[in-house]
Image (tube, rainbow, N blue to C red; front, top):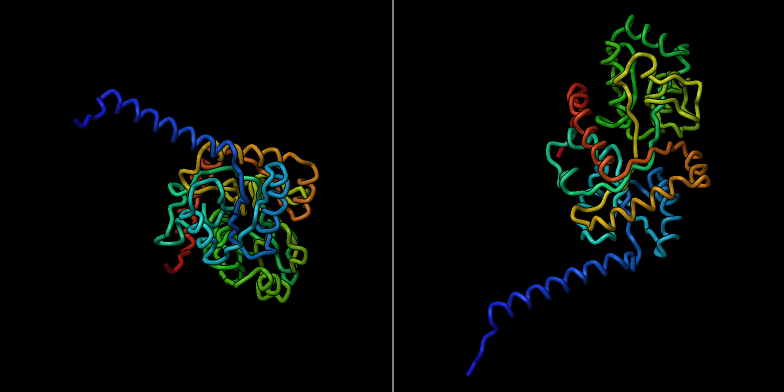
Length: 325
């Protein structure tokens, strides 16, 4: 006669199976990483994000015993890299070096995105910032921010400012400055910072925000768009200290993982990032590319970029910055 397991035997078997599965998942996390880790970078190889990511992750790879391999995926303001990360398997072997673009500006620029900047990711840590410096063309004869504002007010619509495209940080920073100081200026977008620098040199542009690492800006620096002074230019005032308390904007860099990545792995990677960002040798090398350490861990980092998305929505709307889907 055929017999069937009783109710309690079935329950016991189910509990043993669940325990085995949990044990297996825990064991997989305990041995993480057992193979190379992919870091998706939203810029070409050799760009600032790529260089910074390599500097930061090298000691982490040494500590973990597995290399962290850069995977450059430039395009569409970082959205290609972000989408690829969002759809990756959440097993702790894919991370994104994210920036202000994908987790600050993109939700307001693009009508639709193939990913959700909050729901599709888990925050690991913010690691650094790169300040924006305001330069004025030497052809203007203007040497400080007060004279710039006075001239712009006296000559509405006669100053051209450059950027690397609508909705870029270089565009929005001037838009914020103009709104705070009640200025009317003409936006001239370019494809890259090299063109903006040339415009400043020639006098076709009268002002522009450029990254702090710029070596030949083509103009005179008059202010920095960060909350605190820039160590590389300690005598340069911030717009905040000049009374424009809401005018601070620059690029920042951090790491996120696909949603549902095991929290134990996220925390371990965050631990390694925290250790790396305290290493004097690494900090000195980051300073060489004008990167300012600014560590925020997991929940604090998520709260930061959620706040940036909200803060920049009205800025983007006022600037009229949109992108085609």
